[in-house]
Image 1 (tube, rainbow, N blue to C red):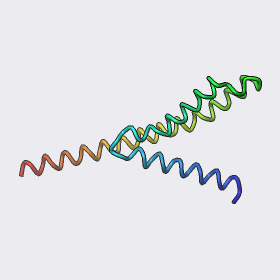
Image 2: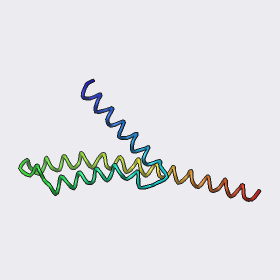
Image 3: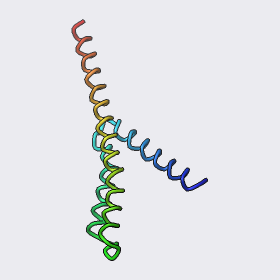
Image 4: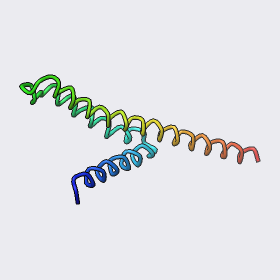
Length: 100
C-alpha cells in the first residue's frame, strides 16, 4: 500500500468517524475530534518544540492542523442540523398523532 493510498484511507476514516460521532443524540460526541485538533495546536504553541525552526514552519504546521479542525466543525454543524431536523419531524408526527 502506498503512502498516498494510506493517507487517503486515513482521511476517509477520520471523516467517517466525525460523521458518525456528529449524528449521535449526544451533541458533545461530535466535538471530540475538533477538540483534539485544537489541543494539538495548543500543545504546539505552548510546548513549542520547533522554536529553533522558525516562525514560518510553526505557522505552517498550525494551519495544517486548523484546516482539518475547520472541516470537522463544518461536518459537525451539518450533521447537527440534520439531527435537529429529524427530531423536529418526530415531534411533529407525535403531535399529529395526538390530534387524531
